[in-house]
Image 1 (cartoon, rainbow, N blue to C red):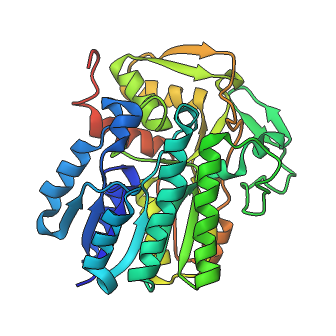
Image 2 (image 1 turned 135 degrees about the horizontal axis):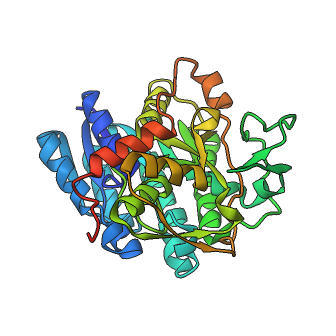
Length: 357
């Protein structure tokens, strides 16, 4: 028996990882205690996603409601499956820098200590399993805001002759910048994943995600940019837009493309790797542009409340370079762009996200 162990299996990337690796013929052990309901309320709950996994995958999916902060509980799971674990995909975490400031202890215990707990149990019980960690571009703090940007009609853009014109590479420093409390906890987990690769020789990779998105997102105000844009437009909710004239740029990568990247690493793993993970030049948008697309797709007028003050540590412009990953895995290709992503999110939720819901 070959097992894929997925933490945060009810979340966007966790649920997609569960389905993807089950589709490859692995049995999937999912760990998810629906802390997203605690973080973000009912909008963020992943209970519906976990129920869907059980229904669709049947005996190929085994679920545990264990908290990743529970070392003894995790140890029992890892001991049970041991060397049958063929890959560990660690997606569980507190993913909002706004929320982290409210409960720094909870944020750090989940993102940093929880990651250490999963790493150490992997080392103790399934050391040969590739370890894939969902990190974040927030490990770079607000350093991207020091880049030379030009204001255009609907977005900010980097100077075309800059070294990062095709996207930010992994050589950007993470020092001397404001990270947010969330960014700090993710830095700790990110560096720990690298260290377990270098110090213990484990096959580990920290994927520093930008906007990871797709129709399985439990879109909430504090997390899930493109999903929440579309949800607000479809439900005729007011969207609070913070700063930068709505021209801040995000690259967006569909969960399908994330999972094919994870599969590539699983099949040919390396030790102590870091990869920026995003839509790159293939798939990116400003908030203004995203609302225009959502309006075009849904036929509904966006309701926007503009707030002059930008969120602390928020990126004014971020586009990832995938060059390092593509150099290591040249057969990987990206399929989705922003219009395709928004269309799919709309079509998947057209019966759920209606005005007044």
